[in-house]
Image 1 (cartoon, one colour):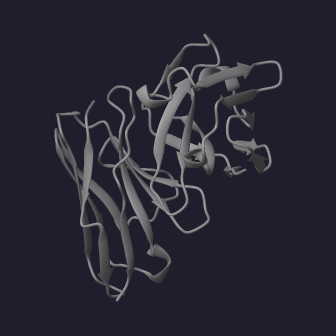
Image 2: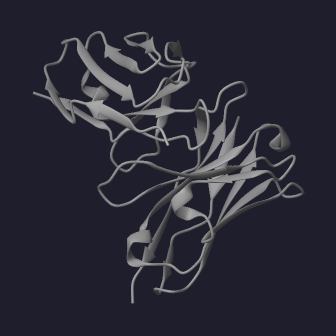
Length: 119
Length: 107
C-alpha cells in the first residue's frame, strides 16, 4: 500500500534551518510529484511547492522562493524540504503529499511533521 | 495568482441534513478542482478530484459539481463522522492554492 512517512518533530531557534524528510513506499517513486503543504496552528492549508523526483523539476510558491529548497533522493525514495532563516510564523505542521497521475490533486499524505520555531 | 474563496466559513447542520459548501476561483480553472476533508489532528483526505470524480473509498453521500469559477461540494445526508473542515484546491497550474476552509459541525 502507498505510504509516505515523515521525519519527527523539530524545535528550532529563529534564524536556524530545518530539513524535513518524507520517505515513500508502495509505488514507483519516480513517477509521481511530491508536494509540500504546511498548516500553522489553527489555520488552513498552505501550498509551498512541488518537486518531480524523476527530473528534479521544482516549483515554489512565490512567498517561499529563496528560503525553501525541495530535493529528492531516488535511491532511498525520499523527498526533503529545507526551510532556512526560520521565523516564529514558520511554526506549523509540514505535510508531504503525492500528486495523482493525471491530476495535481493529492491522493496520499504523510502524517505531518511539527516544526516549532522558538527562542 | 488565482485566489480561492469558500462559503460559508462555518456550517452547523443536523444529522441527516443535506449540506452544501461553495468554492469560487477568481479566474476560470476548468474542472481542475479537488476537495479535501480534514478532522482535527489528522492529515487531509482527498474526497473529490476533477471537480466531480469521487476518490476511491469515499462514501457516495459526497459529491462535487461545477466548472470554471464556481464549484460545490455536497454531503447528501450528514453523518456524525463528517464533522471536519473541508478545503477546496485548484490544480490547473501552479500555485496549487487551497481555499480557506469550511468547518462543518453538528447542530
